[in-house]
Length: 287
Image 1 (cartoon, helix red, strand yellow):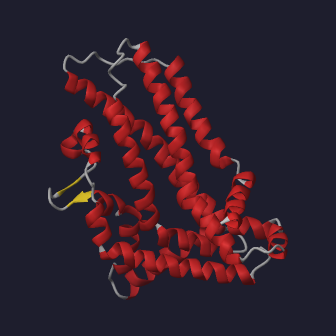
Image 2: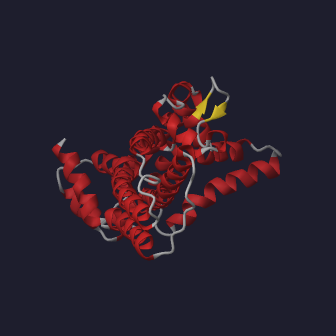
Image 3: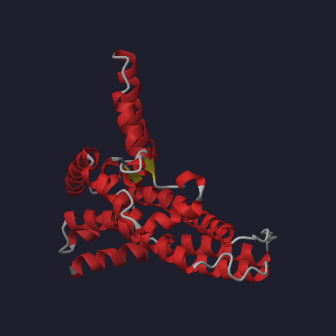
């Protein structure tokens, strides 16, 4: 356990953007709340105030979620390649640290640690912005809704854990490319799947690979938040953000997510790709 902890600390030491980037985003949002033009119509009904608060929480969280998604992908695609490029891989191979531990620590940082950092900064920024905007607009209770804020914590934790499982094959593929490619890691990550899709389309006229890639990249919301008992997706229930956020206290789509064969088939594929990345890490020492 101490070995993995040291390896995770190493990633934070060598990749300061893990915490600098969310802090910059949070600082920019707080500065915008302090100095920007803020105009919120006074709601006559408590339900309207709750809807405004929920919409604001969704908007703030969405900014951080988009940023962390982009950065996590870039981190996983770059992490093993950067070790070979700067030859630091030779130093770490001389240490009593296995390649498996190294790869798993980087996977943990990309899937769990980075989202957790963004989660913490998003929470703090949301609290500050809610207080600032409420004070500037004389709506002391409009944006500060403790119930919604606490429910948002459940949503964050649920999203981090379920997305880590759902996107495991994607992360495994990025690690394989990072461990194998000698240059142009972004192109190597994109071109092989794209080439497979085009070849299938030209020679068979089918879209199996395209549907698989599309479902894995964009099917998370339906897989993680679909409620089969209500026949709808949890997010933005009936277009009402307050009603949607109020539903966070329920089990969301956890049951359907865990019982979905695609979830575990993808996880198995991801585990296989991670094993390939470990083997490539053992054999490649230079970019």
